[in-house]
Length: 476
Length: 98
Image (cartoon, rainbow over all chains, first blue to last red; front, side, top):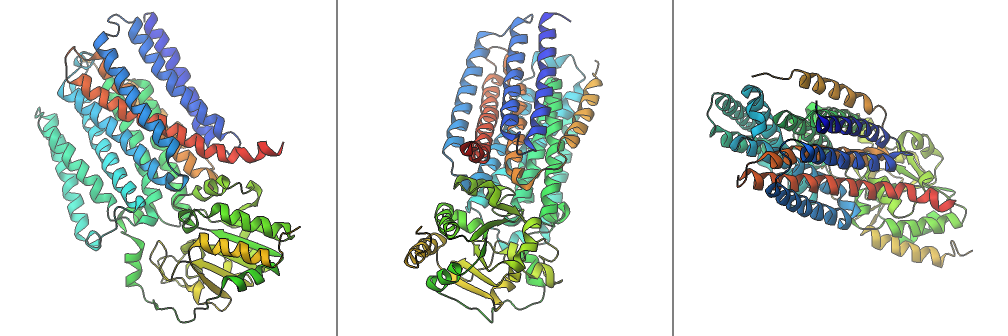
């Protein structure tokens, strides 16, 4: 072991330690921000370690390598930073999906490049190991890339879930693609270098084929799973170039991502299997019985809503993604400020999957300066509903559907929901009678204590502020 | 022709560590945690770097490696910045009160 190896060894050990502490810290509110910084620092350290040890090593880093290193890093970092700084908070899930896809693309390209143009380093090691890791890296990398891009397009609304993707035949197509990938893999091991292209193509299509039929409501789980895949792809790339640090970090992200996926599934009361192979929820619901028509809708004006709010002692807000789309968080904050000034207790009830991703709604409300203490999780807030005068449902739908409790034939059955119907009065602010993200009818809207206030969330809230002002609420 | 079996041990222990690291995560942190872990998966940049450093002069691997490095850094830099943006919102409120 010479000097440069020792330097790399020490730095790598330190980087792994910091990365592990970073992931650990990210799972606690108090330490999360520092932990994120720690992980970023660890990544920086690992790059410095690699460059330093190569620089001090026997062959050094040739000039032509420096040029391409600098070009690649500058362009990538610049665009990444630009996107990260400008993207609105509402499109966070899409952004994570995009980043993730590019990570997969990176693993794919490295493995492909090393396979086509072998580097001096790998010639000494066992060829089989290199080949297997290259194939795994390409396979997982391609699935991560194409799957993430599909997920992003769906969340962005560029891609719907077409009916034909729900056909049973999709399983056959995907299995075929999987088999083709396997054949390409075997050919690759048997010294057929050109089959690598077949592997690239079939695994790319497999990524699309698996992601496309999954409904938008399940996308967060898919992104989390793909995130775990990109860790596996990184670990495989680590085998390609023989880097222990890469293997540890990749394995860590892969395993942690798997756990996170599991946690998310639990929050939505879905099993991973049904998310991946069950198709979209609305498709399942069409087969279940139950009327789709609403029979007992009460609609009311903003003025009535304001009058009821003024007389209330305790108000619970149930925000959903629709609120974020309408960019109405700040207007909502104005309304609640007025109510609070009048001595009315205001709580925000956050369902575990409110928004498009678990925790997304907390981020959005924090952006609008809502005090952290007012955000209550579902289990904490549910016993409060019977003692609540008014519930305002803003752009949430499936998470307040009593079907999940009462109707065992509903696809939502068993999903934990907020028991808003227990409150004295429920106002649902909504554009129209369209179904929620799952495409399932909401029984809440038919209940006698529910009133619908139709309109764009932001406009309704603005009107509400006006009405409250007229009533003299919050003038003190 | 030797294969360093210790790499497989590294893989196994790394996976076990990952399984243990995340025990109980409050739902608030799911999105930031996912985004942070995603940034870390951009560690493939090390593979891209290794490929570029070891490539022969004039080899197309230089360009492929460079593109791969770009993708990876896009993931890493963007991922960490976006995570920080999200987490900053949680920590802003308590500091204001002081």
